[in-house]
Structures are given as structure tokens and as C-alpha cells.
Length: 209
Image (tube, rainbow, N blue to C red):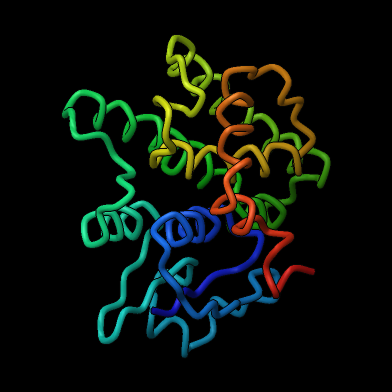
């Protein structure tokens, strides 16, 4: 397999964690987002959205991190990243999508670049990103407030944790005080104690700046 990504991309970070948890090797192919390498014609032929990650497995190309992770979970079911119980499964997905669909996309590089193009001052751009993170993480804190843990949903990592850990890294990068989310930090600590999470961290990647 080949994973197209960027060390700081939280979406690629999610997939790196999943690959590590599944014990799957992949050749990591970096595309420098700040240099626009994801918009090169050769990469657009792989992912016409011009986003990372993309996962190649032989002739198959998959895009969108959550879809990739669920495919990995279905084709390599151990350890499972989604509960068997339908209700628990829906709750894990809801938490993950609150991050992957409603929080991360509106504070990512593409959106922030557009805000700058529209003339927003850099301070306001950074404030926007911080606000988006606070809004999303506050909701996520409430979603799992009564879950005993230590992970988001129980005693093993799920898709929810794969989305949470990279998003907390983003929040810190934008100056968010994450101490306001003690339940999320409990899940993060449990996750980051696992080599699969630790080895997927941005600073551990060969293309880290």
C-alpha cells in the first residue's frame, strides 16, 4: 500500500494511526500542502479533490480518511475500530464525524487560505481557527462526558479516538486552552500511551519540518 499524505495533515494522521493499529505497512508519499504539491497534475490524477490522504492498494485508490479507515477496518478486522453493537457504532461514528465533517474542514489550510484571500487579517484568521476548534471540542466533550473510558468509548481505541487525537493537536497549534476538555484529555492520554498513536504523530514522520 501507498499512503499519500503530509506530516501535519490531521486527516492523514488518522489513517497513519489506523494502519499502525492494524499492523499494516505502507509506503508514505508526502505532498507538501503549503507548497501546493497536492494540486500537481500527477496527484490530481490520483485524488481529484487535491486533498490528502489518499491510499493506493494495487489498482485501488481510496480517498477521504474516514472512508479509508472504515475500509481498513472491514478488510483487516482486528483490532476492530467500531463496536459491534449498532447503537454504540452509531455513537462512535457521530463523535468521529463531529470532528471529521464539522470541525476539521472549516479550520484546515484551504479554508484559512481563502479567508486570507478575502482580506481577513491574520489575527482574525487565527481567531477563526481557534473558535472552530473550541466549538467542536466542546460538543465532543459533552458527547462522551458520561463514558467511563479511558478511551472515548470504552477500554479500547475506536474511530472516535483516531479523529480526536489529531484534532487536539490542531487545537493546540491554534492556541486553544484544551484544559477545558478533561474527558477528551483522558481519552487522548490513553491513546498516546499506545505505540500505534505515538509513532503516527506528526513529529515522528520523515517529512516533518
